[in-house]
Length: 385
Image 1 (cartoon, helix red, strand yellow):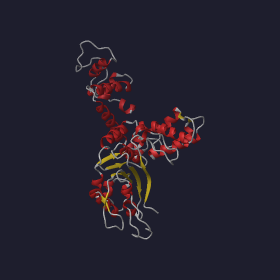
Image 2 (cartoon, one colour):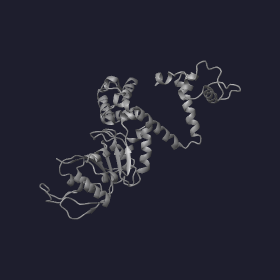
Image 3 (spheres, rainbow, N blue to C red):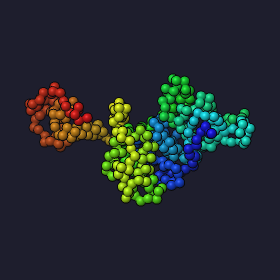
Image 4 (cartoon, one colour):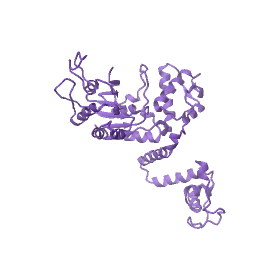
């Protein structure tokens, strides 16, 4: 009957995410601290920078990627961490005004008493509006006023009430498209989009799959009062090959089932209720280049954060080394893959200690030992990628 489903309301310490899971809860929450993929680490660094402020945050991402986890982490790292965190799922039904802003006794049929809304319940803390794109237009107008004036007017009241709440919103739809379709207010979008965070799909951050799976196994095993549960190598390989259309939420459910069905504390492939869909679906293939670019961005950002004095040289050395191993130590193929001459490559390999240095050879001089023309088509990239 309610137009909003309250997902959680809590007053927690800044270290709460590090504490053990409450065995009485219906579900478990993955901890951002177990995220290990470069994309996730980049997101965590951004979270730590913006969390101490009071800025409104808009989190986007597919369903099940962990947007509420991110919202909770923002709250835990903020100056409001000792105050309530209220998470609310938005649905386009009736009485939304009453749920968000409260109501006075007698303001509508069934309003038998005065009741405060979720903005007041989150006073001093953080209000998380999940799937904010589902809000009806009339409620969007009132939410915009709250963000502008920092005050609410309960249904049936003529008096505004001041609220001190940090708003974190989330959506799994493209709000810019919703604006063009006339389903979402542009001015509200700009008010919400002060800090924009995107939570990548699980298939875009494969480095998180095993750490998250291991953490879910530990938490569900504790809840079921079982001993240690581990993944076999074959099970890990299967997890990494899955496309995870349901993202972290799907992984959580799979690990829960695995804990209940595994034998002797070992999760085998047969304990994983996965579809046969592999990671390389047509949809994923069409975005593979973007995923690689984002992963590379995350790695580079992490490297730059370390503040090395010779960053460029270390990256350059790593590219040469990896390309040489990728081409099975074939110098001609490595040079073609990298788009450099073989002599330049030899010079670099000698400096890295892969080969002995050659006497009086200039890196830019012609190479008399090359028996294949440099213009010959290379088969390395096509066969090795």
